[in-house]
Length: 112
Length: 114
Image 1 (tube, helix red, strand yellow):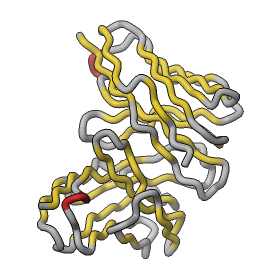
Image 2 (tube, rainbow over the protein chains, first blue to last red):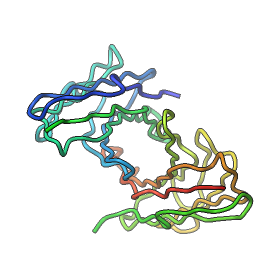
Image 3 (cartoon, each protein chain N blue to C red):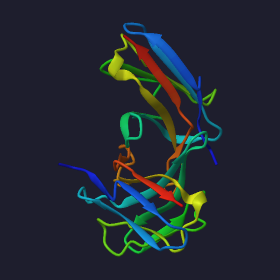
């Protein structure tokens, strides 16, 4: 499967700092998505970037995609304690029947 | 409110006792899926459905059954639960029409099999 792999596994920063998480994947994709999960809760869709896009913004989130390196990054600027959560990348394959495949996530802790 | 509803939220059961976890969505989504989440393993797909009466196996289907008789419902059935099925389960749905949107997840079902 074309599972995404997030890096680092865990990240701890001070409130106000920027947080960067990376995702690598193995095969060609239609799009790549980022999700957030607060402890024990359902995942929440954050942002989707298509394979023909290189950068996308949504509020304090910035996502980049480099299809030549099969990698993506998620930047959260001016982090807040409420950003503490696990973040997952998920890849959507080229075939219409290919379901989303999730990585194992990055656990972000933002210390007030 | 657009949502995916799972029930129950928590469930403790004994080995071998059949159970069903329900999932319902009110967004008229074609695509629905079940995942299990375990520490260190991330989310793994159990089964998915592209539309009514169309289901397919994910990465870890053993010990599970699903059905999709109606568009809105996608129940997960454990015919004979075992302790290794203790996990956090999530149902998700998506519109497959444009593939430009992400999944909407339910709040999860924490299952313990003793």
